[in-house]
Length: 305
Image (cartoon, helix red, strand yellow):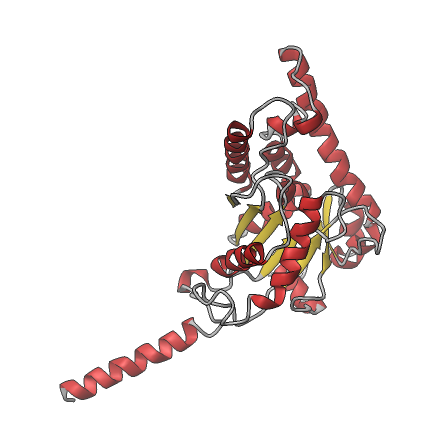
Protein backbone atom coordinates (compact mmCIF):
# COMPACT_ATOMS: atom_id res chain seq x y z
CA UNK A 1 0.00 0.00 0.00
CA UNK A 2 1.44 3.38 -1.00
CA UNK A 3 1.98 6.24 1.40
CA UNK A 4 -0.97 8.19 -0.07
CA UNK A 5 -3.31 5.22 0.39
CA UNK A 6 -2.14 4.64 3.98
CA UNK A 7 -2.79 8.30 4.72
CA UNK A 8 -6.32 8.07 3.28
CA UNK A 9 -7.08 4.91 5.29
CA UNK A 10 -5.84 6.58 8.45
CA UNK A 11 -8.03 9.61 7.82
CA UNK A 12 -11.03 7.40 7.13
CA UNK A 13 -10.50 5.54 10.39
CA UNK A 14 -10.11 8.82 12.26
CA UNK A 15 -13.30 10.11 10.69
CA UNK A 16 -15.23 7.04 11.76
CA UNK A 17 -13.87 7.39 15.27
CA UNK A 18 -14.76 11.07 15.47
CA UNK A 19 -18.21 10.31 14.09
CA UNK A 20 -18.79 8.11 17.13
CA UNK A 21 -17.17 10.49 19.59
CA UNK A 22 -19.11 13.51 18.37
CA UNK A 23 -22.37 11.69 17.62
CA UNK A 24 -24.05 13.55 20.50
CA UNK A 25 -22.46 16.86 19.59
CA UNK A 26 -20.12 16.71 22.55
CA UNK A 27 -16.72 15.31 23.45
CA UNK A 28 -17.23 11.86 24.95
CA UNK A 29 -14.07 10.13 26.06
CA UNK A 30 -14.13 6.34 26.04
CA UNK A 31 -13.72 6.27 29.82
CA UNK A 32 -16.86 8.39 30.24
CA UNK A 33 -19.21 6.39 28.04
CA UNK A 34 -22.42 5.57 29.86
CA UNK A 35 -21.84 8.27 32.48
CA UNK A 36 -24.23 11.15 33.00
CA UNK A 37 -23.44 14.82 33.35
CA UNK A 38 -25.75 16.79 35.62
CA UNK A 39 -25.85 20.50 36.48
CA UNK A 40 -27.93 21.81 39.38
CA UNK A 41 -28.63 25.54 39.57
CA UNK A 42 -29.41 27.27 42.84
CA UNK A 43 -29.84 30.98 43.44
CA UNK A 44 -27.29 31.18 46.27
CA UNK A 45 -24.44 29.08 47.72
CA UNK A 46 -26.61 26.56 49.60
CA UNK A 47 -29.75 26.32 47.43
CA UNK A 48 -28.57 23.57 45.07
CA UNK A 49 -27.16 21.69 48.04
CA UNK A 50 -30.45 21.92 49.95
CA UNK A 51 -32.70 20.97 47.05
CA UNK A 52 -30.60 18.27 45.38
CA UNK A 53 -27.51 17.55 47.50
CA UNK A 54 -28.54 14.00 48.32
CA UNK A 55 -29.37 13.06 44.74
CA UNK A 56 -26.15 14.71 43.60
CA UNK A 57 -24.17 12.59 46.07
CA UNK A 58 -25.92 9.44 44.81
CA UNK A 59 -25.05 10.24 41.20
CA UNK A 60 -21.46 11.02 42.16
CA UNK A 61 -21.12 7.76 44.11
CA UNK A 62 -21.96 5.91 40.90
CA UNK A 63 -19.37 7.71 38.82
CA UNK A 64 -21.52 10.39 37.22
CA UNK A 65 -20.36 14.01 36.96
CA UNK A 66 -22.35 16.62 38.91
CA UNK A 67 -21.82 20.36 39.10
CA UNK A 68 -23.68 22.53 41.63
CA UNK A 69 -23.92 26.10 40.36
CA UNK A 70 -24.75 29.07 42.57
CA UNK A 71 -26.02 31.77 40.22
CA UNK A 72 -25.36 34.58 42.71
CA UNK A 73 -22.46 34.87 45.12
CA UNK A 74 -24.55 35.22 48.30
CA UNK A 75 -22.89 38.48 49.32
CA UNK A 76 -25.84 39.96 51.26
CA UNK A 77 -26.71 36.76 53.13
CA UNK A 78 -25.31 37.68 56.55
CA UNK A 79 -26.39 39.98 59.35
CA UNK A 80 -22.90 41.46 59.91
CA UNK A 81 -20.26 40.57 57.30
CA UNK A 82 -19.40 43.01 54.52
CA UNK A 83 -20.16 41.90 50.98
CA UNK A 84 -16.66 41.11 49.60
CA UNK A 85 -15.65 39.09 52.66
CA UNK A 86 -18.99 37.29 52.75
CA UNK A 87 -18.77 36.37 49.07
CA UNK A 88 -15.38 34.79 49.69
CA UNK A 89 -16.64 32.96 52.76
CA UNK A 90 -19.68 31.54 50.97
CA UNK A 91 -17.53 30.45 48.05
CA UNK A 92 -15.29 28.56 50.47
CA UNK A 93 -18.33 27.01 52.18
CA UNK A 94 -19.76 25.84 48.84
CA UNK A 95 -16.43 24.32 47.87
CA UNK A 96 -16.15 22.50 51.21
CA UNK A 97 -19.68 21.15 50.84
CA UNK A 98 -18.99 19.93 47.32
CA UNK A 99 -15.98 17.93 48.50
CA UNK A 100 -18.14 16.10 51.02
CA UNK A 101 -20.79 15.37 48.39
CA UNK A 102 -18.23 14.27 45.80
CA UNK A 103 -19.29 16.86 43.23
CA UNK A 104 -17.91 20.07 41.76
CA UNK A 105 -19.04 23.57 42.71
CA UNK A 106 -19.24 26.82 40.78
CA UNK A 107 -20.31 30.25 42.03
CA UNK A 108 -21.10 32.90 39.42
CA UNK A 109 -20.03 36.51 39.92
CA UNK A 110 -23.50 38.05 40.26
CA UNK A 111 -24.48 40.00 43.36
CA UNK A 112 -26.98 38.41 45.74
CA UNK A 113 -30.44 40.00 45.43
CA UNK A 114 -29.64 41.56 42.07
CA UNK A 115 -30.25 38.73 39.59
CA UNK A 116 -32.37 39.77 36.61
CA UNK A 117 -33.64 37.76 33.59
CA UNK A 118 -31.51 39.67 31.09
CA UNK A 119 -30.10 38.59 27.75
CA UNK A 120 -26.59 38.68 29.21
CA UNK A 121 -27.60 36.32 32.03
CA UNK A 122 -29.44 34.03 29.60
CA UNK A 123 -26.20 33.73 27.66
CA UNK A 124 -24.30 32.97 30.87
CA UNK A 125 -26.68 30.18 31.86
CA UNK A 126 -26.66 28.77 28.32
CA UNK A 127 -22.86 28.67 28.35
CA UNK A 128 -22.76 26.94 31.74
CA UNK A 129 -25.09 24.18 30.52
CA UNK A 130 -23.15 23.75 27.28
CA UNK A 131 -19.75 23.80 28.92
CA UNK A 132 -20.85 21.03 31.29
CA UNK A 133 -22.38 19.12 28.34
CA UNK A 134 -25.36 18.43 30.55
CA UNK A 135 -27.70 15.47 30.22
CA UNK A 136 -29.84 16.71 33.13
CA UNK A 137 -30.42 20.28 34.34
CA UNK A 138 -32.13 21.07 37.65
CA UNK A 139 -33.28 24.51 38.81
CA UNK A 140 -35.83 26.39 40.90
CA UNK A 141 -39.37 26.79 39.67
CA UNK A 142 -40.15 30.32 38.44
CA UNK A 143 -42.84 30.96 41.10
CA UNK A 144 -40.56 30.70 44.13
CA UNK A 145 -40.73 33.33 46.85
CA UNK A 146 -37.29 34.90 46.35
CA UNK A 147 -36.60 37.03 43.25
CA UNK A 148 -33.22 35.36 42.77
CA UNK A 149 -34.88 31.92 42.93
CA UNK A 150 -37.60 32.96 40.48
CA UNK A 151 -35.18 34.42 37.98
CA UNK A 152 -32.93 31.36 38.10
CA UNK A 153 -36.03 29.39 37.07
CA UNK A 154 -36.84 31.86 34.30
CA UNK A 155 -33.28 31.97 32.98
CA UNK A 156 -32.96 28.19 32.91
CA UNK A 157 -36.32 27.93 31.14
CA UNK A 158 -35.18 30.53 28.62
CA UNK A 159 -32.03 28.50 28.01
CA UNK A 160 -33.82 25.17 27.63
CA UNK A 161 -34.21 25.57 23.88
CA UNK A 162 -31.32 27.97 23.25
CA UNK A 163 -28.69 25.43 24.37
CA UNK A 164 -29.39 23.59 21.07
CA UNK A 165 -29.29 26.66 18.77
CA UNK A 166 -25.88 26.81 17.04
CA UNK A 167 -25.78 30.56 16.37
CA UNK A 168 -26.78 31.60 19.88
CA UNK A 169 -23.52 32.01 21.84
CA UNK A 170 -21.67 30.39 18.92
CA UNK A 171 -18.34 30.59 20.75
CA UNK A 172 -19.57 27.78 23.04
CA UNK A 173 -20.46 24.60 21.08
CA UNK A 174 -24.18 23.89 21.21
CA UNK A 175 -25.75 20.66 22.44
CA UNK A 176 -27.24 18.44 19.76
CA UNK A 177 -29.49 16.67 22.25
CA UNK A 178 -31.66 18.76 24.54
CA UNK A 179 -31.10 17.83 28.21
CA UNK A 180 -33.89 16.79 30.54
CA UNK A 181 -34.81 19.85 32.60
CA UNK A 182 -36.18 19.38 36.11
CA UNK A 183 -37.47 21.65 38.85
CA UNK A 184 -36.47 21.20 42.48
CA UNK A 185 -39.23 21.08 45.07
CA UNK A 186 -40.89 24.05 46.74
CA UNK A 187 -44.14 24.57 48.62
CA UNK A 188 -45.69 27.39 46.61
CA UNK A 189 -49.20 26.82 45.26
CA UNK A 190 -49.82 29.67 42.82
CA UNK A 191 -50.15 29.70 39.91
CA UNK A 192 -49.59 25.94 40.20
CA UNK A 193 -48.26 23.64 42.93
CA UNK A 194 -45.14 21.51 42.65
CA UNK A 195 -45.74 18.09 41.06
CA UNK A 196 -43.48 15.24 42.20
CA UNK A 197 -42.68 13.38 38.98
CA UNK A 198 -39.47 11.90 40.39
CA UNK A 199 -38.76 11.16 44.05
CA UNK A 200 -35.35 9.88 45.08
CA UNK A 201 -34.60 7.97 48.28
CA UNK A 202 -31.51 9.52 49.86
CA UNK A 203 -31.26 7.36 52.99
CA UNK A 204 -27.78 6.10 52.10
CA UNK A 205 -26.41 9.66 51.82
CA UNK A 206 -28.54 11.66 54.26
CA UNK A 207 -25.70 12.05 56.77
CA UNK A 208 -23.34 13.14 53.99
CA UNK A 209 -25.86 15.70 52.74
CA UNK A 210 -26.48 17.17 56.17
CA UNK A 211 -22.77 17.25 56.98
CA UNK A 212 -22.18 19.15 53.74
CA UNK A 213 -24.92 21.66 54.52
CA UNK A 214 -23.64 22.26 58.02
CA UNK A 215 -20.25 23.33 56.68
CA UNK A 216 -22.20 26.43 55.58
CA UNK A 217 -22.05 27.96 59.05
CA UNK A 218 -22.69 31.50 57.83
CA UNK A 219 -26.21 30.35 56.98
CA UNK A 220 -27.13 27.45 59.21
CA UNK A 221 -25.29 28.31 62.43
CA UNK A 222 -25.09 32.10 62.28
CA UNK A 223 -28.48 32.42 60.57
CA UNK A 224 -27.64 34.29 57.39
CA UNK A 225 -29.16 37.69 56.66
CA UNK A 226 -31.52 37.62 59.65
CA UNK A 227 -29.28 35.77 62.08
CA UNK A 228 -27.14 36.55 65.09
CA UNK A 229 -23.76 35.70 66.56
CA UNK A 230 -23.75 32.57 68.75
CA UNK A 231 -23.39 33.55 72.40
CA UNK A 232 -20.58 31.04 73.02
CA UNK A 233 -19.21 27.68 71.89
CA UNK A 234 -22.09 25.81 73.52
CA UNK A 235 -24.65 27.95 71.69
CA UNK A 236 -22.82 27.40 68.40
CA UNK A 237 -22.87 23.64 68.92
CA UNK A 238 -26.54 23.69 69.91
CA UNK A 239 -27.35 25.55 66.69
CA UNK A 240 -25.38 22.99 64.73
CA UNK A 241 -27.34 20.14 66.28
CA UNK A 242 -30.64 21.89 65.52
CA UNK A 243 -29.46 22.30 61.94
CA UNK A 244 -28.64 18.60 61.61
CA UNK A 245 -32.02 17.63 63.00
CA UNK A 246 -33.87 20.19 60.92
CA UNK A 247 -32.45 19.07 57.58
CA UNK A 248 -33.15 15.43 58.38
CA UNK A 249 -36.72 16.33 59.32
CA UNK A 250 -37.12 18.22 56.04
CA UNK A 251 -35.97 15.21 54.01
CA UNK A 252 -38.22 12.92 56.06
CA UNK A 253 -41.21 15.16 55.38
CA UNK A 254 -40.48 14.98 51.66
CA UNK A 255 -40.49 11.17 51.80
CA UNK A 256 -43.78 11.10 53.70
CA UNK A 257 -45.39 13.72 51.44
CA UNK A 258 -44.53 11.78 48.29
CA UNK A 259 -44.89 8.23 49.58
CA UNK A 260 -47.18 7.22 46.72
CA UNK A 261 -44.54 8.10 44.13
CA UNK A 262 -41.85 6.31 46.16
CA UNK A 263 -43.97 3.15 46.16
CA UNK A 264 -44.40 3.47 42.40
CA UNK A 265 -40.69 3.95 41.71
CA UNK A 266 -39.13 1.63 44.32
CA UNK A 267 -41.83 -0.99 44.75
CA UNK A 268 -44.18 -1.49 47.68
CA UNK A 269 -41.71 -3.00 50.13
CA UNK A 270 -38.70 -0.80 49.43
CA UNK A 271 -40.78 2.35 48.91
CA UNK A 272 -42.45 1.92 52.28
CA UNK A 273 -39.05 1.79 54.02
CA UNK A 274 -37.68 5.03 52.57
CA UNK A 275 -37.07 7.56 55.35
CA UNK A 276 -35.49 10.49 53.49
CA UNK A 277 -36.10 11.81 49.98
CA UNK A 278 -35.74 14.64 47.45
CA UNK A 279 -38.33 15.36 44.77
CA UNK A 280 -38.25 16.83 41.26
CA UNK A 281 -40.74 17.93 38.62
CA UNK A 282 -40.15 17.47 34.89
CA UNK A 283 -40.07 20.79 33.02
CA UNK A 284 -41.98 20.64 29.75
CA UNK A 285 -39.46 22.93 28.03
CA UNK A 286 -36.72 20.32 27.73
CA UNK A 287 -36.69 16.71 26.62
CA UNK A 288 -39.63 14.78 28.04
CA UNK A 289 -38.22 11.49 29.35
CA UNK A 290 -40.19 8.27 29.26
CA UNK A 291 -40.59 6.13 32.38
CA UNK A 292 -37.87 3.86 31.01
CA UNK A 293 -35.48 6.76 30.44
CA UNK A 294 -36.12 8.13 33.93
CA UNK A 295 -34.80 4.85 35.32
CA UNK A 296 -31.67 5.22 33.20
CA UNK A 297 -31.16 8.83 34.24
CA UNK A 298 -31.69 7.95 37.90
CA UNK A 299 -29.63 4.73 38.10
CA UNK A 300 -30.31 4.17 41.81
CA UNK A 301 -33.92 3.18 41.16
CA UNK A 302 -34.38 -0.61 41.49
CA UNK A 303 -34.51 -1.25 37.75
CA UNK A 304 -31.68 1.19 37.00
CA UNK A 305 -28.22 0.15 35.90
